[in-house]
Amino acid sequence: MTGLIISILVMAVSLLIVSKLPLGVDIDNPIAALLGGAIIGLFNGIWFLFPNWFRTANAILSLGLIPLIGSILVFGLAALLVQGFRLRYGIISAILGAIALSLVNSILVFILRQVGVVAI
Image (cartoon, rainbow, N blue to C red; front, side, top):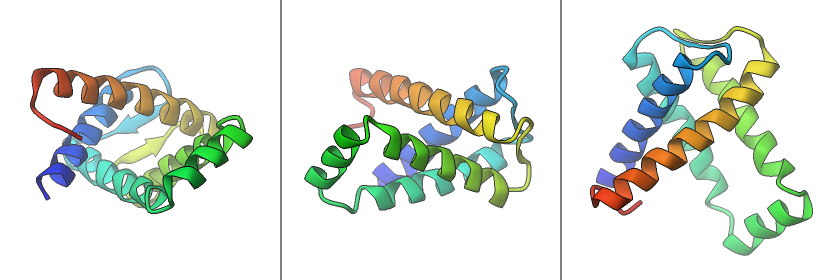
C-alpha cells in the first residue's frame, strides 16, 4: 500500500514537472496532478497484469510502438477525465507529454532508489 502511494506521489510530481515544460500540458493545481497521477498509475498497472514474457514480446515485435501508444492513450484519457489537466495542442501534447512523463518519472524513481527511499 505504501508503494502505491509513493508511486502516485512520484507520478504527480512528474506531471507537475512536465507541465512546466513547453509541451502544451497544463495542470492547474497539485490536486489535479495527484488525480492525473493516480489515473495514469492505475491504467499503467493494468498493463503489468499481463505476464512479463507477453509484455516483452509485444515491445520487441512492435519495436516499442504498442507500449508507446498505450502510454499516449492513457495520458490523453487522464487529461480527459481530470478537470484542471489539459492538453493545449491535442494529440501532439499527448505524445510529447507521455514521452516526457516517462523520462521524468524514470529519473525521479532512479534518484529515490539511489537515496534508498523506495524500492519500487
